[in-house]
Image 1: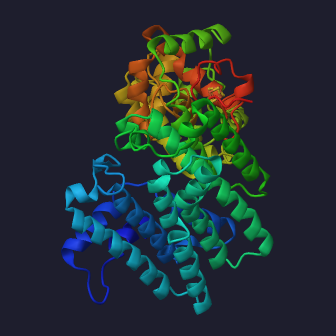
Image 2: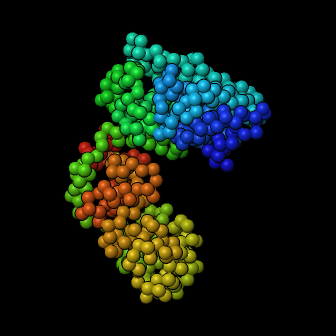
Amino acid sequence: MPFNRFLDTVLDGGEPACEPGLKEAMLYSLSDGGKRVRPLIFFALSRHLGHTPERYYHVAAALEMTHTYSLIHDDLPAMDNDSLRRGRPTSHIQFSESTAILAGDALLTHAFYLLSVADFGDPVVNIRLVQLLSSASGAGGMVAGQYLDMQSPHLFPSRELLENIHRKKTGCLILCAFQMALTVCNASKELWLKWTEFGKKLGIFFQLRDDLMDVRADVKALGKQPGGDDKDNKLTYPALIGLEASDSLLDELYKSLMASLHQEAAPVPVFEEILESLYRSCTATQMKLTKRAVEKIFNRFAQYNPHPQTELKYDSPFQLLIAVILSAQCTDAAVNKATPALFAEAPTAKDMVQLGVPRIRELIATIGLNNAKSRHIHACSQILQETYSGQLPQTRAELENLPGVGKKTAGVVMNVVYGSETLPVDTHVFRVSNRLGLVSTKTPEATEDHLIKVIPRPRLRYAHHWLILHGRYICKARKPLCGACFLADICPSAVKE
Ligand code: SF4
C-alpha cells in the first residue's frame, strides 16, 4: 500500500474510535499535499541500509503526524497567525481555533500511540523510538525552538541564538527521521555518527532555505503569504547576516551535503532529489527570467550550435521513427549500437514486416524492454506498409496512433522530419528547462505547453535538441557543470564554483 494511502487510513479502527469532527480536522492537515520530507528521509535511509521501508509505515506516520501538529499550532493566531498553508486555508481558518488546537494535540498523541503498537520483534526498539521522537519534538527540541523563535524579537540577536533556534525548531525532527531509521535498522556506531552529522547539516540547510524563501518567494511558490518572518521581526539568516551571505551559506551547505552523498558507495537518489529540488526552488527565486533573458539563452544556444541534430543514427524517416521508439528509457548510444544490424536487414517498413518479431527481438536484444519494443516495431511497420505505403504519416495525431508511438516519439519525428515547432519533453528537457527557470513544472507532461509559450518562436525549431544536448553534456542530472556552462551568468540555478 502506498504510504499516502496508509496515512489516509491511519486514524481508522482505533479503540476508542476517533471523534469524527476531530478526525476530519486531523486528516485535513495530514493530507494537504505536503512533501512528506521526514518520511522520505526515513524511508530512503532505511532502504539505503538494506531494509524494506514498507515494514515501518507506523514510524514514518508518527514523524509526519508530529510535523503536521507543529504546523497547525505554528499557524495559530497566537503564534505566526497564518491563514494559508500549502495554498489552502490553515486549520483554524477552515475549522475553528479550538478545533485546530485539539487536532494538533490529537495528532501528536496518536504519533506516540503508533510507535507503541508497531511490531519490531523487540519492544526495546519501540521504547527507543518513543525516546527519540519525544526528545526531538519536546521541550528541549522542536517546542523549545518554537518558543525561542517567538521570543527572538525580544532577545539579543546573535548567530549562536539563530543556530540554536534553527537546530531545535526544524533540525531536531529532521535529525530524528535519520536516527529513527538508524534505530530500526540497528545501524553500527560508525553509521550512526556519519548520518547524524549529515542530518544535522540538512536541518540547517532546510531552515536557511525556508528563511530565504520567506523573503523572496511569492504566495504561489510558498503556499502562504511571504514576508511573515520580517513582519514578526523574527531572527532569521537574511535578517542577521544579509541576503548575499545567506545565499553563499546555502550554496556552501548544498555543495557539502551533495559531496557527502557522492562519497557513498551506493547512491541515495532520494536525498539528492530532496536537496536538489529544495536548492533549485530557492535559487530560482533569486532571479526571475525576463523575456530578454529567455532570448539571451536561446541566442547563446544558437551561437554555440546553430544547427543541432539528433544523435540517433538513421538513413530515412522510417528508420528515425524506429530509432526513437527504441530510445524510450534507453540511451541514444545504446540504440546506435543496435540499429546498424537491424537496419541492414530491414531498411524499410516492408522489410521490417517480413523480418518478423522474433528476429527483430534478437537484433535489439541489448536494448531494454526489447520484448514489447519488437512487437511494437513490427505492428507499427505493418500499419505503415498497409495504410501509408511504407511512408510516415504527416500529422502528430496519426503518428501517435501507431503502436509504440507516444506523444514524445511523435513530437521528435514531427520536429526532425517535418521541421515542426514541437518540443517533446524527455528527462533532459524537463530538468534543464526547470533549472534555467524557463518553466516551473512538476512533471515532463506539463512542460511542453509551457515551453512553447515562453521560447521565442524563431528558436522553437531547434529548442528540443539544444535542451537535450545541454542536459546530456553540461547540465547533467547529478553534477551540473555550471563552471563550464555558457549560460551560468543568466541561469538562476547556477552553482557558484
Ligand atoms: S548554469 Fe548551466 S549547468 Fe548550471 S544549472 Fe544552469 S544550465 Fe545547468
